[in-house]
Length: 349
Image (tube, rainbow, N blue to C red):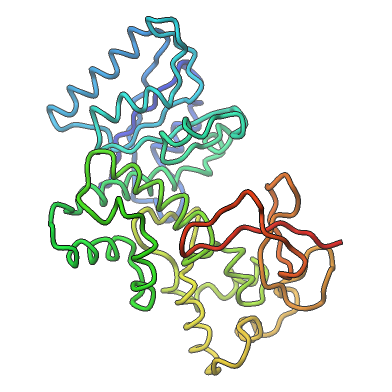
């Protein structure tokens, strides 16, 4: 990975990115990024002429091999094109990606995500809120996306041998051996054959929003904590003992830690010397020295049993809670891809 990233930041307001936010991106303070730096090039687009100039700049950057490592674009650009239509950040991302397919694109917006069409969101690997930028919450993700995309681009997918191609994909994901056979059929077919210029973007979105974005082979902190009978504080207490179980493949980010479910299961049993008949939640609590303040609890006090699923608390789909499967219901609108779990919503009283 590069020590210093070149970031293009495209916005229709010159001063929207505060000096403090700019400094936080260029000199990140997160412990895992203390050796990393970034150079921000702020690019203003207030007219159609300026928009065309940025596209031309991308063309020239590609010619001299000085492309940015990542491009951040304001989604709600108030720029009218020559035909009178309003240019959005997503449409500009499409135009730029044609000229620089080896560059990852992310969006930033101050608008509620639900007000942005899915097709527009799909033009970015991720869409961040403006608050997340100013607070610095998304800075590790910017570095992770830039690093991950560069790794994916460098991987050679020109080989026609299916076995070789398969190994490269599994290696990119750093998948444990016990998951490889099950995981490969769950990877979309478009990634299992020769890649074109659009494949890296689609692959990055699949990793970010599916493999890392929903439960299946990987769990986030709340899901992993529930698996081992603890709350998130409890998981943090035993995290050092679970070292090696974290996802460390392409696009791994310290701000959205993920855990290989198979590795956590195996590690917990190894640490306790337990056999397969003992429930994992009991073993996790044992590792945490049976401190009750670290135990998971069912949302709403619906049960005194250990929670065994994570569900959304209500229809807003914002807060997630630990609960029992019988006190939750599948989300009707959620159709999980092969190998992934259906999301659930709390239904207890």
